[in-house]
Image 1 (spheres, helix red, strand yellow):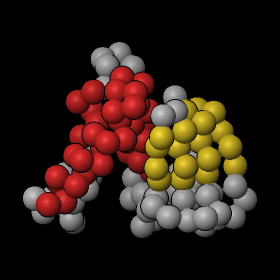
Image 2: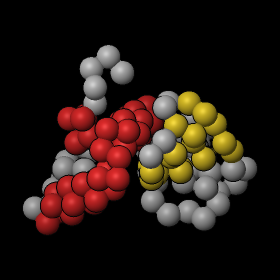
Image 3: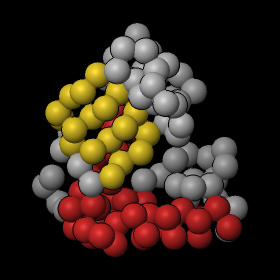
Length: 113
């Protein structure tokens, strides 16, 4: 990971893949997604970061729509929602520490997008 950084424009965002700094598997701010690795590359997309890369891509795309709808309230609402879920023992995305990662963000997803 962290090799051959690339920039793509797709899935409602500018995608920075193979982040050389590392960190979490992905983070979305507005219409920018920074990936630790490359979920679009079939050679390295499956693995511990993304058991299902298409779900990870869709999950981050949903965050871009949240950012469009919530504007400056997106980041605080995401952090508060994630922390609330962690405090209740359900993991950051509400699926449990070992359960399925459900995208809470689908709530704000506009139909037809």
